[in-house]
Image 1 (tube, rainbow, N blue to C red):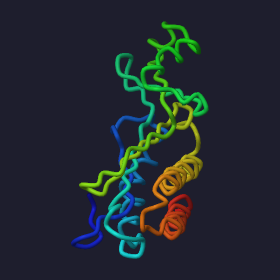
Image 2: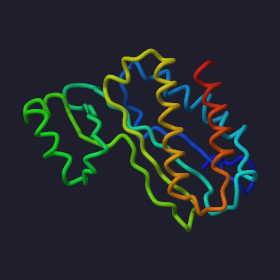
Image 3: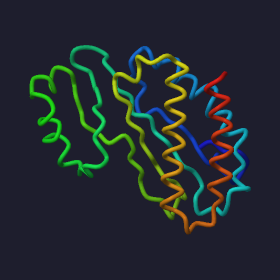
Length: 186
């Protein structure tokens, strides 16, 4: 947990779930580590958003990747309106692709957003955003723009779920949007 002072972690931290990704996303992910996270730690103001009930939102990026024939993961994004359970993912994927295609391409069906509960003990919420293969073929600036939209969506969804918290999500979202705009245009 990155700390902005001795008692308050940075309210939002972006994390790679794995270091693997398609080469087209390498510089964008490095930019998260080297530019975006330090800017979040520097510019977000945890004491202005609310109490210590929510200490940090950790957003994990799950990237599609292909390292070699035996090591590949290519995500297919599940339609949210289907409200699938994890036990439904493979059967739903089989309705879209053959077993051979699934095996050869390393296909996995996942929702775009997975948001966990607020841990009352730690004050953390873990969220994961899943990125399909085609994402890595966008330009670097377009990847950052799309990621920024997804990051804002995650925080907005958390805000909708946690309306009863004494937490200024509007201010957090505004500050986050300003930082993300800076990152996209740097």
